[in-house]
Image 1 (spheres, rainbow, N blue to C red):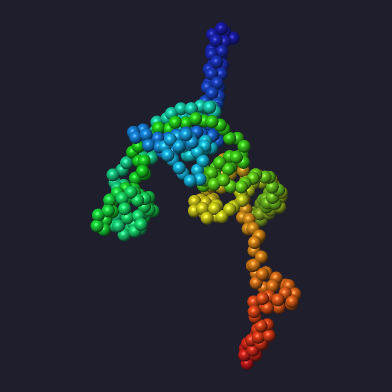
Image 2: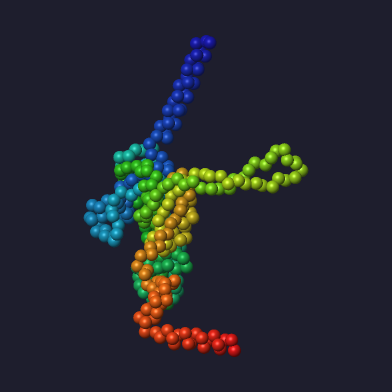
Length: 327
């Protein structure tokens, strides 16, 4: 091989090595699908109005007092729409401990202000208790804010309250969550704002599986599909339902989509929701009303005596009704 050919080959090898190193560096650090713990504060750029924060000192300074909310880092999934795209782009490829401030343009935050979304409607569409400027109202499926009321008409702004505002997002990646059960808990907290009892376990499940048709069969006839029962392993997320979950409107409307995303993100086979009905404190149910439903004759007589009912009179009425029916 000539010196020139050797030089070309060496150069090509270096190019390949450089491209592989570049690809590896591009994939290093945090990536879409990672669960990160984020500490952040978001404000409007123009007025500095607080939009959201996880920091207790900021919440105290701003006088935020949301009942039941703990101001602490939130677990979010990168690449799933839980963060502004500009913030996600800034985080991806970074590491735990990274901090930065990202400015988000209005059109990428809560949208530009649209004058066409400020409309006049009949005041009859607004509940009486909400007929005042500043009231948040729902009209024809749209959320809006009442601006003015004159006579039988109301001026309502259907823009997002932060429409037209650029947002400053100050964040720090304080951790990464890799335990799948903790990831599952964080997903339901993101979707529903609930801390639910849940666990992951592997189950042996019987399933029907198609059997390959016999290749020696008659080629002119379509073979009948045959199945056999096989045992397979299913990695399952079990969730204990509570009254709060059962009555949650978002859960009722989107449980299929939520569970599908949970199984996709966590690599699970299925989600099972378990409802537990506690029987304690139900002693005055059917058993209490009917003397135990199968208790002795003495129990029934005692129950009738406690209720101040004459058993003989009841029997006479029953026998009389039977005779009338036979006639």
